[in-house]
Length: 219
Image 1 (cartoon, helix red, strand yellow):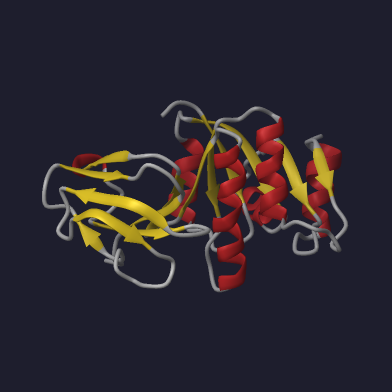
Image 2 (cartoon, helix red, strand yellow):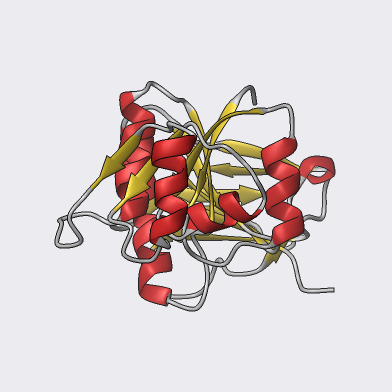
């Protein structure tokens, strides 16, 4: 997949998972977003950029990164037209980053979570690949067919939902619940919690956009 940018946002951050991802060789650029900045500070991690209105980040943390670490900061008024995560995502695109992993985009606030999922469309339209990940979910948008390999799967389950409207001639091959030339609508749960039965699952459709959620259960 190549080198990636990691956005550390202000939702739930699972310590072991986040630290592992940030230390992996594939991670070459880190953006701290508002409350996510506190996690980076507590673990002595230097981001490459800081973004947000900082209504949730302690002032001493912001001062450290601004004055002592000299990290570039993009600060915004809390009364703004976009979420902090969206602003960070747009910064990635401005910097021509093509692989963008968003951590801390899930949690208790479902409105924030859904906003973050919809923001993935911004990256998709710009020709970049962006995805949300936590310990139990990997979420991305697709506008073209894809083959999922069982040996590389995030978890044993996957779900597909249309984004923005009906998707016609939708197909799933190699799964427990296959579909052939189906009309996928936004108003049912038909494509939730599917599973691999073959080594590869092919999801195909000629036009439209879908949300792909790869999931696993808690141990």
